Length: 440
Image 1 (cartoon, rainbow, N blue to C red):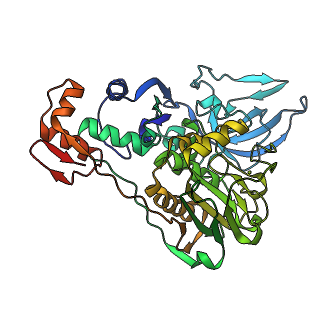
Image 2: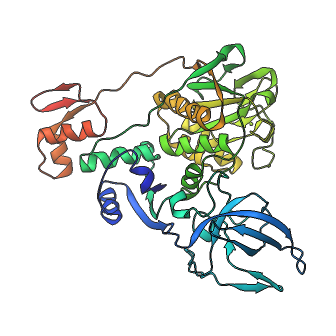
């Protein structure tokens, strides 16, 4: 799992250097296998405004751009297919040094002068994406330092999370561990959700036929969304965690999954037959096409729309014309997800988490968080309430911890009150305290 320190510090404050933090986490059982420096101070790289685009007279795949750098307008030869007049993109001036070591020089390319370079994401170290230029919000003034837009350098930890610690498959999970290690306060994200549309139950419904395989399923409705790019800061965080941005709705589901550890999925309401979702086992020989455009089984009332816990279907996915979104947040039985993923040869960020188990009590909180972000960034109107199929709520387990037993297992002299402090730092409530034990 990849953890950008800038994101981690939103939830827990610590002053330790990345190397020290990596060592502490490793000794705590979360092996840090890599430290990657990303970004730079981006000296001489600014926001450029593309004033005009015309074909290169001597090359079919190149264009001639006039770029406003904030100080002057310069000619740039560009090979990207997605450059348009009015775009705001990263511009590296002559003399700039890119994170990959490339130094920008003035050049003549097929007979035309180029005084700088328009940059793709991979050239700036944000991702491996090289399909086109990195698009920046159009309201940023030309000439603004790129470092001011995207922030300075960051460090990304690569953590090898063992199968018994699914609670650490999120930024918040790692933050909880760091808070305990350093005696710091864990800061949880606020989830203000204003529900302005009609009751969700009047528009759509959910039927869970397989309660054993799906002990909890929730659905929210977000109406009149505007499909576009997610905020730049969100896209950068996704890229640094190895996830390619798609659009604001899909990006928010991935963002909340990384933040909270709860996988989410978004459906286009108009593509669900009868505006109803039925959770059931797949029928024999049943096939459908997943989002990766491969024919492969969750369903709506008539046809399959997703493989539960693994991947959604292309027929119900979010597209440019989506206006109403059904937001799924659920808990699927780990063994079933593991069996399905293996049988279909699919491994996704969602299946990886479901196979190890998600917190059934955190299902709705993640849904609220994602819905609030969709209201904020996609202009959505949230329907009132949530469809929550949760027939059997599990009882919280209480564990008696014997202090002497802890010391025997660890081989370390640790005081009784220090043991209880560790529990409390990990957000585990100590509900009873005896002379030689405590109940957690």
